[in-house]
Image (tube, rainbow, N blue to C red):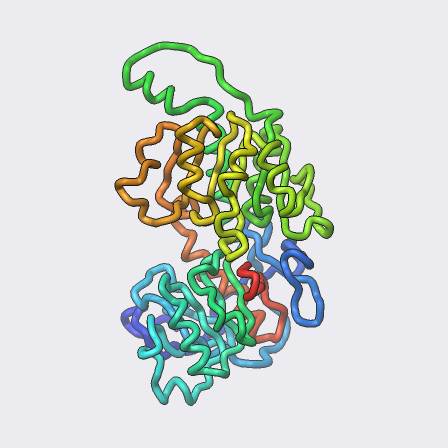
Length: 394
């Protein structure tokens, strides 16, 4: 019961398991299944992914508990969004052993003797600490990232390990899809001009562009791309997708899918280019000066992936010299964006401080996904949702 928990919910410590939590249940609901480009599970079975829009909670999960989940939380102990994990109750068979931000917080005989087998990660600077924990506790079988992107924990050490890695894919896609359409409309209807005219009390009608009939190109057509494409189709847009392995891919919201070798074709055909690919060594600088040179002068670049995917100097040059019409940037190469960056002063740039997925509940919901969906699966020996290819980085 809650009365048996520590009086300070976020205090690191030993929290008992409980049967009281109702798990999410998705085995019979429309999850995203994929193989090939999105990876396969051990033995070749298709990977299965959570989706915030289509996956729903249920009251029970059948099946006996076959093993324990002894959890280390590599997190800020005061993070209120982790309360579902810190304060419980946790699923039957699951126990939080300790919370901390570095190896020193966990390097205790009382923890080692419990043979922890799960690590939950939500700490921004966890790359080195995670590798150290994996070396210190070889009993760890599974690592879960509260974020969808894993660039903050990716490392050769993690890639070489035998642990299963899962993430929060599908938790943040819907709001980023909404941002994508907002950014498209921002430029199509010329909102900066509207705001200037309002400020100047100036009544001056002008022609606007339609989104209907225009083309949205999605670089990295994954869960965010799919959520954006679904909304784009409602606006009457044509959707192009770019994926590493297009041959095995189909989606009702995507009119045509290209392989990575067709990036320049996608850039040339698109009126709006959504960059939603993860940051890896292969995608760093992917949107280069040459790629931008293929765009229509009326094109708009929208980045919700990671800043370094775009050559920022080349992007600024393209914006200043009319190579493209504008850019909507929720991410930048350096964050926070330095005050002397030219991006601040460009009228054709829509800037947001990497917060377009920052809904009032997004991080808590992500922790609830770990506690309510994947933990019950783990203790029952079931397939975990949202597996990540550690070497590929997504």
